[in-house]
Image (cartoon, rainbow, N blue to C red; front, side, top):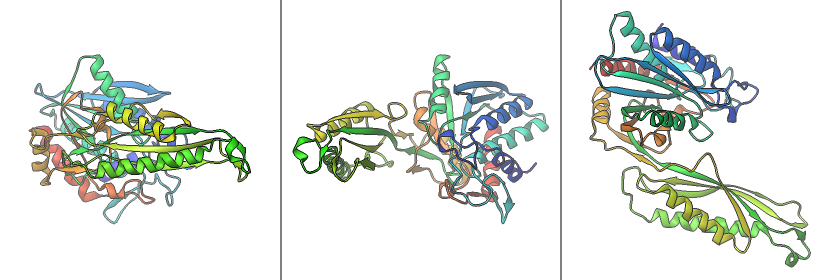
Length: 378
């Protein structure tokens, strides 16, 4: 089976994140792909652990023993974004015009296919990789707070283990990405008191208080924008991206909800950022009270890896690409505690991810196969 056909095979196994499921995707989530990966890697001779993360959604840890005492983890998130906006069959995995099409064809099933292709080739030749390869499939990257990555991190810590090098699979055009922002999301409810709109003094307008929060967040963004960036990843940002409230046109609104998203730079302390942001919201809404919920855990600081480290340098040389930073987030946010060296890397362009028509160039797939083949035998 060629690399394009293997990617197509994986695309044809729907694995839409349950938070984005719909009629086209069904509600199996990553279950079918987790089962496939566990069975396939076990048949290839790996030591396989199936680790339930949440409600039957399982990470898969497949260990292929190498010939040295070095080890690398390749993390591939198994879930994809939703497909309800896609054209045609989102899981057809068709191959045409030098591309593989379908949901997950670029984000991020190609790396899973590439690593398996190289390991299968080596097994057929009676060879083993020079270093132990931990092929890790994680759930819940596209929504839900990187639960799969957090669980793999905790699984390692429970065993007192770290990994020398971790590669997080994302479409980077085979350029090693050594930094990107983290973030925290806050669901905010401003509590007011309803009254007849003809007598607003008898109520407490939650929309007015929420408007003060929005203005305060905009001012905070102006402050952040004026700071100097400490790394190439850039500065933190903050914005309000959702706002909802009001009962009727003749009722003073008793509640208003908003979503505040804060992107964090690598040098920022996530606990300090969270505390300061909550205080800003509470102070600007006063005298009305607020309820603030942190979505999907306590948030993550940005990640930044020295681009001169061995992992970044080797991948850049093998791929003939320059190290880079990215604007999007990834599972790398959960691995700084357990990885000595950490990079985001994979074939294809992030520009094709999440689109109504998703695809990957077969040339990129072949390039990634060559890179991994060489790297695994060094």
